Image 1: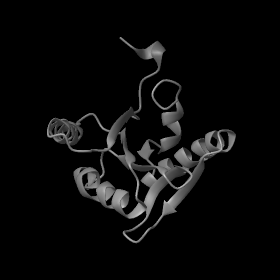
Image 2: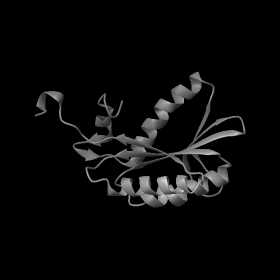
Image 3: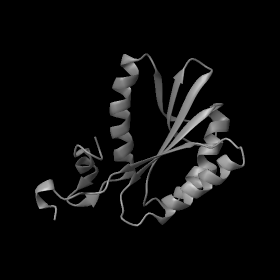
Image 4: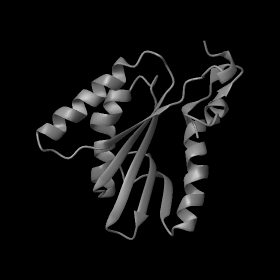
Length: 146
């Protein structure tokens, strides 16, 4: 919806990117409906002692998925992937996690750095969070494409 159906427009107000919290609330609104239909528990701002994780999804005690959402412009983007989410996973006793990046800028060298860290970690045989990239940049109308 964000990449192909114009939902990225709600992330901006007067051509300025809204606070990251806005994107988190949008994600929560959509995921809560899905979770209700599929009997999945979603917890927002779950805190097992290391700070507030954006989202924790669970089916009982043994199946937990942590999701951390960040804009690509976030100054702690790499640290969020390599340290922050790892600590949340330990505290929440989660076996699976997702680092969701909303790309809001043309320059994406930081995203490439995270992709390389992830590739290297996988090659070392270590567990690493999944990485989901969503293009949330403003796009011209199809009628204005050259």
